[in-house]
Length: 257
Length: 228
Image (cartoon, rainbow over the protein chains, first blue to last red):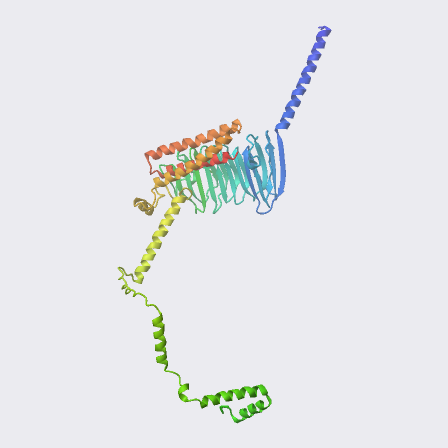
C-alpha cells in the first residue's frame, strides 16, 4: 500500500515526540530518585570493648556481626533527608538521628545496614520501623521499637538480650547463656523464641489477654501455670539464666532450635 | 659563807674570789645581809600564826562579798518509774532495730514492686504474709492503695508528656501521626481492659501488674515521641 507523503511525515513527528517525551520522563524520574535517595557510609576501627548505640527515628535497622575489628555503617536516606553525625567515643559508636534532627518535624526514613564485630555490644532503637540483629555474641543486645515494628534477633548468643515494642512481632533465635538475662516485651503481636533443648533458665511468661503460652519442649516438669493460665512460671534445667516474657495482647511460643 | 663546802671546794672558791672582783663584791653583799639577819631580834623574824592569818583574810573577804539570797534546797532526785536491766535494754534495742528494718524493707519493696517481681511468684503471692499483716494493721499500704498511688503518679507524668506531644504532633508527617495514634490506642485499650478487670477483682495481682506495665509503656511512648 502506498501512503501519501503528509501521513508519513506526521507519523515521524509523532515518533520523535514520543521518544522525546519518554526520555524527558526517564530523566525526570531518575533525577527525582537521585534527589530522594541519599547514601551515607562510614567505617570505624573497633577495639575489644566496642559498642554501638543507635537511635533512629523511622526506618529499618539491620545489624550484622562479622569477623573484622571495624564497624561499617551504611544508610540510605529518604527525602527529606535526615542529618547523620555518628560519634566515635573511643570505640563507642553513637548514632543519634533523633538528636541530630531535633526540631525538624518531617524527616524521611533512614534505613541502616551496619556491620559490627561479632563481639560488639549492640543497643539499637527506633521510633517506628523494623530492627534486625544477626550473629552477635556479646554481653548485650538491646532492640527497642517505641511504637510499631518487628524485631528479629537471629543467631544471637549474648548474655543480655532485651527486645521491646508496642505492636509487631518479636523473634529470637539463639542460645540461652548461663547467668544471662533475656527480656521480651510487647503489647500486641507474637513473641517466638527459638532456643536449643535442653536450655537452663528460670521463666516468667505472661500473656494475660490470649493466655496463649506454648512452651513446646519446655512444658511440664517444673513449669506451672498461675493466674488462670495467664502466666507460666518455672525452671528449665539448672535455671541459671533468667527469661521474662510479657505479651499483653498477643501470644508466646517456644520453638526448638 | 655558811661553811657548807668541804676544804677543797672552799679553797677553790676563796682562790676565785681573790682574783674575781664581781664575785668578791657579791660575796661581800651576801655576807652583809647574813650578818644583818643574825643581828635582828628573833621576834621580828618569826612569821605570824598562819591559821590566824588565813582566818583574818577569810573574814575580810566574806565581809566584802554581798551575801546571795539563799537558794532553795535542791530537789531530791525523782525516783525512776522504770528500770531496765542490761538484757532488757539489749532486747528493747534489738526489737526497735528489727521493726525499723522490717518497715524499711517493706517500704523499699513497695516502691520497687513493678521492677522486682519474683520469678517464682504467681497471682496473689507477691505480697508476703508479713506485708499483709502490716497492711491489715495500717502500717503499710494495701496493694490497692499502693496501686492507686502509683497510678496517680503515672497519670501525672502521662499528662505532662501528652501536652508535649500535642505541641509537636502537628509537625509530624501523616504516617508518623497515624502510627503513633494506632499504638497509643492499643495501649489505651489494654489500660481500659485492666481497669475494668480490677474494678471487678481489685485483688488480681497479675492484672494490677499488667496495668502498671501498660501505664509505663504509655508514658514511655509519649516521652519518646515528644522528642520528635
